[in-house]
Amino acid sequence: MPLTLYGDPISGNCLKVRWVAERLGLAYDWIDVNVVKGEAKAAALLSLNPAGQVPIVVLEDGRALAQSNAIMLHLAEGSDLIAQDAYQRARMYEWMFWEQYTHEPAIAVRRFHKHYLGKSEDEIDPALMVKGRAALARMELGLAGETPWLAGDALSLADVALVAYTRVAHEGGFDLADYPAVEAWVRRVEAALRIA
Image 1 (cartoon, rainbow, N blue to C red):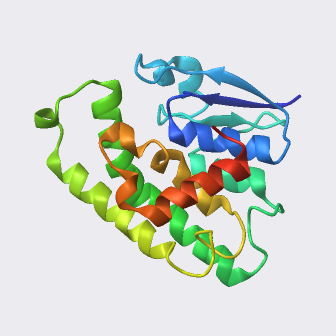
Image 2: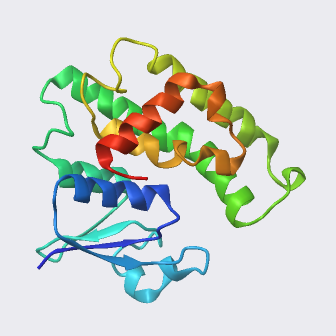
């Protein structure tokens, strides 16, 4: 029995799990869950993830796992998306933890309010723009080195985690042209993952 992935196709957190599964050639069934309509809080999904969030994966053995980065780490165990070198692996974790704590709460949240809820600029917390720009500036600095990837000399889960919302940051009002290294990195990651 293949993996079952529950996710909303507008969610970067859900898509990054899907991209990892596809990159690794894993068979899976995708079940759409409309977060805007509250479908993630349906009883059947709450039994899999009491937090009422997607993505959720149900593994081949029937066990469920939630949280996008935890799912990606589980699926990619032993693959080339996780560095063998302990330091490079720790750098990958560093970016992944930062993504969920700093990047996603600003860029993804602002995008959701502006693009999906249709809020005007006056209705959106201005701190989200400040924090989002700071996050993109941090990525620009991180990509100014000698490697084209965030952690090490190859595509890793750090890149997958961060490209999910960075590639659609414009939908939240962020202009990636202000961050040329980030903009070029987005194109590299999209090409590596074969996403449009």
